[in-house]
Length: 564
Image (cartoon, rainbow, N blue to C red):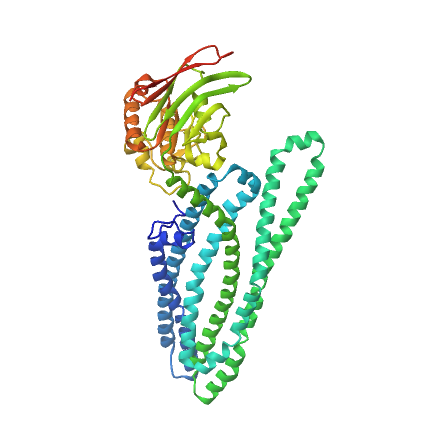
């Protein structure tokens, strides 16, 4: 999983941004090389500008000619071409690095969201979750991108510029740079305000998203109830609140940059005063003064970027703090599922009523770890309903216990982590084949697709992991859709797995191989297999057979057989 970090003792450590960064070590290596070449090479600009200025003065004095100027200019162009080439490489690698981080973080957050308790999701609100899943992830990765970029474009190049200034004159370099800490101090003082304004903008954005969904989802209700004008006014109020919060956040983050730069550039005053006297005394020539002055200007501009970087990182920290609890809870859920011990399920006089009618009653059975319980019988006798009962979707009478604990007393989150159910009508996403199986988890899906007998379709080229699958199942056949759902169930399986008619759309030979894969994969898990195909039912350990009956009164009759 994307958010897991395993320590030496096997315990899971909290989610950290570095867990995402470590996965991009190769890109970071290329980024480091190109970034160093580019930013150290930036010092060539001030040097050649000073040489060109000196050459121009010598030409005017008659001591040098146009050929000397052309030679310096040609060398300048060649060096800058190498530097800018490295810049293009650095930008490519940093953008690719940021895109990979964004993709991994979205996948991790998606996996965390699908494992949230329904009560928590409803309490937090869809709009807030949408903002966290999209905007906050983007803001966090943008902060990582800016930090990585500015680490080289600001940090490395500032060190290079400062070294060049000190090479020419240490005391003048220190004197001219005395104003830079003031800009940093100002940025740090604004840190809290920037963070608060950014957090307020994020909260307002989430509220606006929720209001938008409410307005669209209940359009007909508000219109027919005659309250449309009032709802529109409330929406406009929410929109105005978001605009105000967003503007305040933007002003604090961006409008202060010119002031940072003005403060930084005050260092030109001692350069004009002392640097000019150096030239008049003959200590410096024009090349030295021009190089020092140009280098300081670039250094001062970069220092103002550093202040801007502080604000960008602060904004990213706000977004990270908003999504971090979700990633942590998703990690805890995944680790808890991995640690689940095998369980024994006992049913005593189990019954279900729907619409005032008894669907079945008097059902008793046990299911031990490592066993497969087949549930079979005629159409509409209650087989699928039994699977829904075991997944906690349908209330029941009698007793149904998991290691002695009544299933109906379990919380939704606990039960969801315990039981995984494959419906007889697979639900697919508009996503790739691999994404439909993984559902956001960082897992190699190919072995599971092979267990579902889709490996041959991939090897033949009929399908691929990147095949686009639509919500209606296109371009997959009915059998392929069922096998995809089977593979997905194995990937996300809990301790108890309920499979509702997984072999309905496959031929007998494919059914045989899939059942063999299920047996080999099962381990200590308990499997409930709902099927009307007697070949596979006869291979299970126990069978619950619904034999029909008067469903209008007493419901289906049941009998239990042990085949082991």
